[in-house]
Image 1 (cartoon, rainbow, N blue to C red):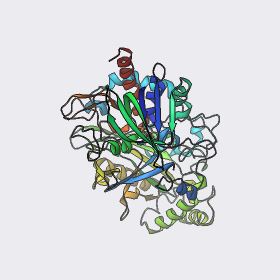
Image 2 (image 1 turned 90 degrees about the vertical axis):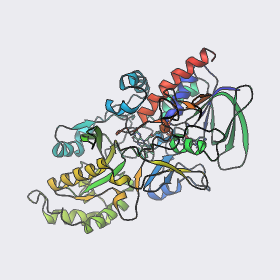
Image 3 (image 1 turned 90 degrees about the horizontal axis):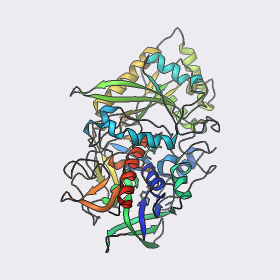
Image 4 (image 1 turned 60 degrees about the vertical axis):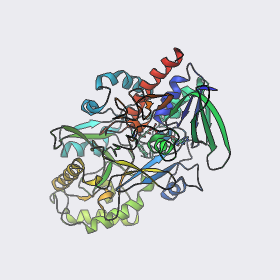
Length: 501
Ligand SMILES: Cc1cc2nc3c(=O)[nH]c(=O)nc-3n(C[C@H](O)[C@H](O)[C@H](O)COP(=O)(O)OP(=O)(O)OC[C@H]3O[C@@H](n4cnc5c(N)ncnc54)[C@H](O)[C@@H]3O)c2cc1C
């Protein structure tokens, strides 16, 4: 019998395992496998082969497509930390106005998470063209980012996503999970939780299946922490299959975190090398919504890893050919001949002289209205349905901004893929669905991540600690907030266990 079984090894699960393994007998269960330096996909075909499917159950990543939206997620030891950019960012205080815990009450937990994750800024960031460009189009609004990267070993190849192959990223196996292992936590990799039941003697029984096979085993625990990520946890709690009825808020108020990516193609301004970057800088632009409420719009500047750039270069050259109007721009600095020759160069080989060297990728995170709803397919797999997501006022405002930047410098805008015919808005921050609330009427979990029964009582010994409990859109990348939520939940669960509750 374990004191605590934690399901999922992303930010929520890793923090819980790192903290609780100090004093208690912990088992950490992860559906995916350990990915080591050198193994990550290095080209688009390799990325396609790493897709998780029934035939490739231990794949690295997958997507969930809903109405109007699609989201990528990871399946690996360390969760999405192994495939993300390691951007570590705290939301603005006003975000917490609709949460049961105020911004100031979260302070110590953000501090605790930061003291372990130790994000730092890119020392070569100032030599990159991204900062100069943002200063030109949005003077005074630049906010440089902190990433969980060891910059001394970083080769600036931009391959943090889909996985660092030089071992420079400080993903969770190097921080919280390493602590858990050192503390003696048991780790079951390639094991999927398929059933959870409240057993006799106040304990939980968990049926674990070897990922991709039919072999099962059962383990028992006093406390269970579901940290399977937004979709993983929703799949497990899906009301039709679950023997654990929860709040009617299940699957409500989901957010895409305003996710989107667009390009300013073939500008007169250089990126200063295709190398150089994870996403390391941004601007925060104030947006006031129809209710006069301030909302965060964060536009981050990034780039496509050079090893995967040829196909996007061809696609963009094609797309820009169809775009009218913006090519005239600031002709004094950038003649039409120069623009045309940069585009042509990229058609056979992308070099520092081609259009991609002058193309900025902008990744947006924004405080959307959190109006997505969980949908489940016939296999019980969750996704987010949000038919009009792309028309969210803050996203329209972001698009206007991008066009105004293009007008001011002379560039083509290649808009968010969701605005193309028959395409969906794609994201990597599916959040909510088990939102944190003050009671069963507005939440699936309480401020300590304990799960409400439909009666309003709390399930003894059950917590959800992952991105699904996020109560509203953050407007900034989500991993630090998931970590802070887990730090708070770990403190509470630890003190309950010590007190013998
Ligand atoms: C490509 C990409 C880039 C991103 N970039 C950033 C960034 O730079 N900065 C940032 O802050 N955020 C970023 N994010 C988002 C951030 O990584 C996530 O919000 C965060 O990882 C969520 O943590 P989590 O604990 O909810 O779950 P996850 O990290 O999603 O981990 C959940 C884990 O649970 C496992 N699991 C699921 N179901 C089961 C089951 N039944 N049994 C056992 N195990 C199970 C999964 O395999 C997975 O490993 C990015 C995400 C992606 C996909």
